[in-house]
Length: 109
Image (cartoon, rainbow, N blue to C red; front, side):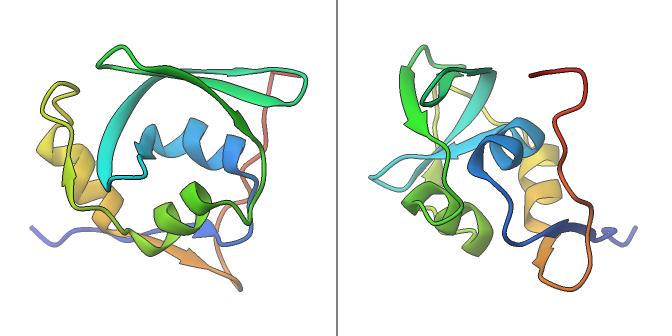
């Protein structure tokens, strides 16, 4: 079965992208699974499946946003146990400037 491509806008805010993809690249290149994303005053708070909790500023130019769009990572976190279907879905996602779905925060502030 051929993998269907998913298109997302390239220049989205990091909060909307992480909330949709549910993955987070660490500075060491480890791809973590995201359990919860909570908006805060200065950005948002990310909770991973392996128990890491950290605050992030919302910027489309940040390291994490660039790495998510370019799919730069070394390996997935063994503690988060990111499933293979999620990795293949992420691999088939295309971040395009001309086409794709605008990520809007519906029902949230």
